[in-house]
Image (cartoon, rainbow, N blue to C red; front, side):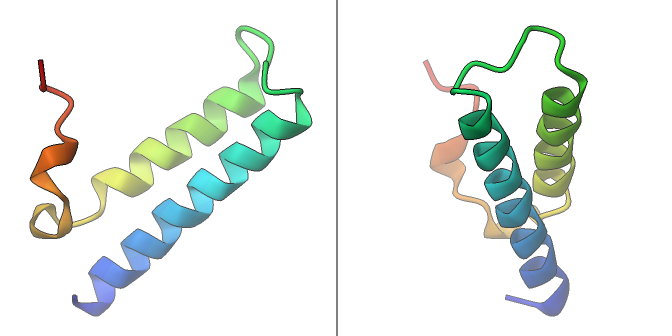
Length: 65
């Protein structure tokens, strides 16, 4: 795994951790439209999109039935 892929994976893991901590602090039920929650969710998605496709598990596809 190259340096860029490691950095992207590390950023994605940190974003997931930040989101998990925030959700736990909110009693596992963030308010609908909570801007902090939406910001953290966007950070997770953005970080994931930066991981090169060859390092992603094809079984994690959202298109599964």
